[in-house]
View (cartoon, rainbow, N blue to C red):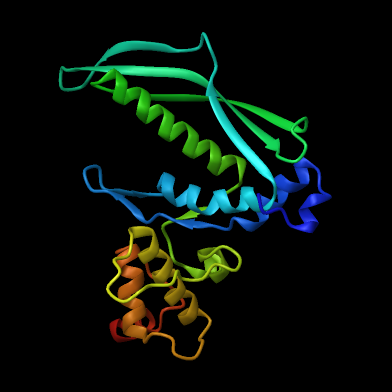
Length: 226
């Protein structure tokens, strides 16, 4: 645990507030091609959250509440069968240096699948992910309109693109961070920013139907239509 001096004197509620302040917003960088929607992935949340919990001296643990597991077989629209799984989970946020200070949260996890084990796994993933998003008040966007969200919402405080060695492959999250950095630089009109055309391609990759008011190329296209 790398607890800074400021956090050492804070109670658990103040530390939770600090994590909520620091974590920033997230873009939907993952894609479900089968159902055609974008979403925030579990890795995306945890990669930002874990360092902040460590920095503020907090631990977060989960368990299933005994006696709450329910499942039933349901009919699908296509005449098949699926398992619906519903159960209660418990999350405990603890002040690591004073374990007697803790906050307990209960929430419901549910999902369905033709395989009951997969239904349980999906319920676990979805339940924990959306609990974290609500607990830490994480805004999520698939729209790059700076007038709606503000440029600062694209990156968390002090976030910079990760270093890259020559020939090293980037993960989807690293690519998203690099893309967000280019967007931030363009919107702030910083020296060396990408061109209007390049920015236009960037935001269309994130959302093909979006029209960004800060995009010079979008403005140019609108003028040509008139």
